[in-house]
Image (cartoon, rainbow, N blue to C red; front, side):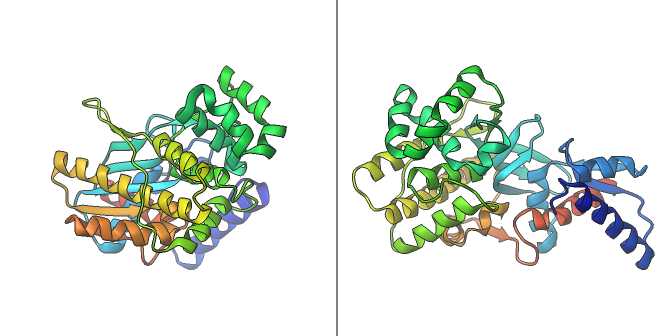
Length: 333
C-alpha cells in the first residue's frame, strides 16, 4: 500500500510484527524495491537481515513467472506509471529479457520530461504538453493553446519555463504518462483525482469504438548495443492530427490503444530476432486495461508468441511483492 504518511507506515510495521508472531516466522532474508525513498525500502534495509533489492519492472515480470511456475527466460513487457530504473531514472515502458535471477533492458519508449515531477502524474495536461514538444517542437505552444485551453490559460507559461530550464523535469519512459497525455489531448480527463483516472477514462472512451482496427505507426530507433527506443511521440503526433481532422474522440482513443499494441508487437519481434525468446510475459498497472490486453494478446499469439499474464495477483503494484520474493528466493539459491 501507500506508505507516504506515518500512520500508514506504523500500520505496516505492526502488520509485519503481527504476522511474524502468529505464523511463527523468523525471516532470514528480506526483499524490497530499489527506490531509495520508499519507506518499505528503508524498512527492509533497517531490518538487519540480508537485503535483496529488486528492480521494479523485473519484479512485475517475475510475478507472472512465479504464478506460472516458470524459471525460464522470457521477454518481459512491463508497462506502468513509474518505477525506479537500474540507472536511477524513471522507467515505465519497458521491454526486458529476464528470468527469476537476472534482467536485461532490451527496449523502452523514448524518455520525455515529466514537468514538475510527481505533479505531472496528477495533471495529465503537463505530460500532454511535454509530448507535444517532443512531437511538434516549436509548434507545441500553439497546439497547446488549441487542444489544452484550460492548461494554456493557467499553467503553460510556468511549465514551459520548467522545461526550458530543466528544473524538476526528470525524464520518464512511463507508459502510464503516455496514456495520461493521450487522455488530456482528446479532452477526456485533465486531472487524476484518483490513481490512473485519465487512462481509465481513456479506456472507457475507446470502448465506444470496439470495432476500430486502425492504429498510428511509431518509429523504432536501434543504435547498436543499447536498448531499442520506441518513438512514442510519433503516436501523439498522429493522434493530434487525426483528432484535429474531426475524427471522433472514441475512434482516436481506440486507435491509440491499437497503436500501443502494434508497437509492443513490433518490439517483441525485434527482441525475438535477437534472443530467440518465444514467451512474452505482460505485467504492470497498464495491463489492468482490458481494451489493450484484448487487442495485444491476439496480435502476439498470431505471431507465434506464448503469452503469460497475471491471473492470481494484480498486474499492478499489488502483485509486485510476489515477484520480489520469487527473485530473492532464486538468487538466494
